[in-house]
Image (cartoon, rainbow, N blue to C red):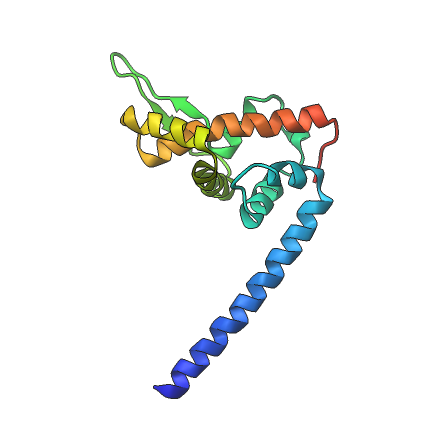
Length: 157
């Protein structure tokens, strides 16, 4: 057992070094990107989530309007009403990697910003699931990203 434990510990340390190196590279690339700087300035949005979000957005010009970005990010619900039933659903054709990064970033944001935490808790009190509450908060955050980019006047990655 001793040699196996030592080998596993060595591999874990090597992986940690690789992860740290990758995070430094992501941080460097995010600083070179105006979109990366804007997204990274949002409280709770860490290096990895910011990098993933920026990479999946690419350039903001890809989106026709402010409404299309939250839909692509998986933060905008679709109407699923029929007859007397009123409900929503999550779009199936969206960027799943981008949505996962956005969900993680917004969940961290909830822990970092008191006002966002109150909004999240309000949604939970409305009997929304965790994911529904995170998506409800994610949409205005995506709108903020859109507004920051448009107000800044510069775009791209």
